[in-house]
Length: 465
Image (cartoon, rainbow, N blue to C red; front, top):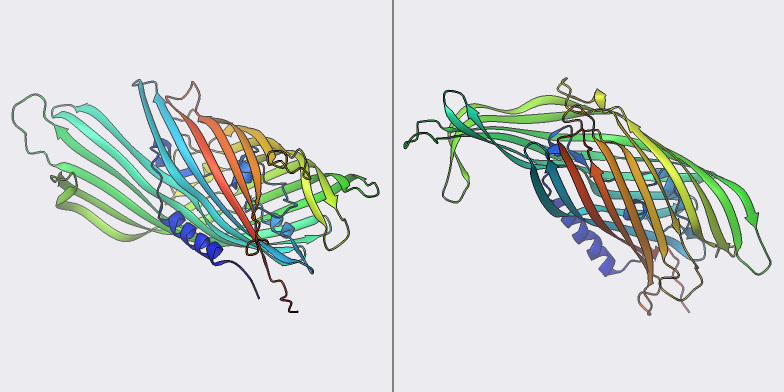
């Protein structure tokens, strides 16, 4: 029977509730387009090395690389110890600074973002299952614009948007020799609400003409199943073995993933009304000019493909036995991701989006597994990315750049109750930019992420004296 502490169950439950209910506080006008700002889809471990995921297998089995489901095959299980189940949680603090050239403005915002919650289970040797929940995209902006309407007076427009998509997933990964293949499936769901409010501001006379404030609000509710697949092939280049010492394997991994094209069957509510603000700053509808609910719309999201390669050195103790243990002494890799967002359609109409691509490169290094010093047995990571965002608000393209640094700190919980449990704290720091001198609006961001990877032994046989 499975054995897991009550503390772990409660942690999983409350993090799940927090992930669904929490909302970030960023203000990004770019989230107005397409399906909004797309969240980083990597776990915190992989974010620390530039987001390299396509050709990454964790030999320790202490993280859930849900970006490539083929990696689930690396969850650890043997007949003497049982299966080591992994809880992987991620959180981020995101700070952004927007700058516009015309008019010369600067705006800063920050927010707390639950990044993901996942569970990895080894079903059998070389067969693993994972499930989880994560935010997929975010719509969050509030922009005020003042202008002059000829023959009327000054006008103030307030453009606002909120909502986003979430992804609930479950997947399997299986290994045959050096080849691992896996898939994720599940449900994408969420809401996207955009509104435009217009208020006439009388500046030329001492009385207010009878111009009511207007509100145009559109709410779109999305829900659709999805399917993605991945593969990793591991090739051994060289193996060094000496009597009484761990074996050292030098290898290369090739990886690929595909998130297939999605057609969302969505419903839409639209309201066109006049309104006034109440004393508390809320809105009170005066007259509904037009209102419709439950209209059917279709949203087409293009496929995304990712290809990568990594080179690594693994150190393996007690190879060929049930107590075999391996860790990655170092790894370096690169990958390329692309998606034809020019094919995106909302009810048959295109949006201000374009084809996306991104190049990532990064790696990790662990000084010495056998040391008793905390920072000696920790893992250090670094990486960088560059590419072009899928959002193309001004038709000049939106270049992206970022640099990352990460660290994994192992924490072994000792004691009679928690002796079977093991925890790794993964940190990642990312600084990046969207836009260049050809864009009127550029965005700099700083993201600090913390991942907590907890593992416990399940499915082990009870023994009685």
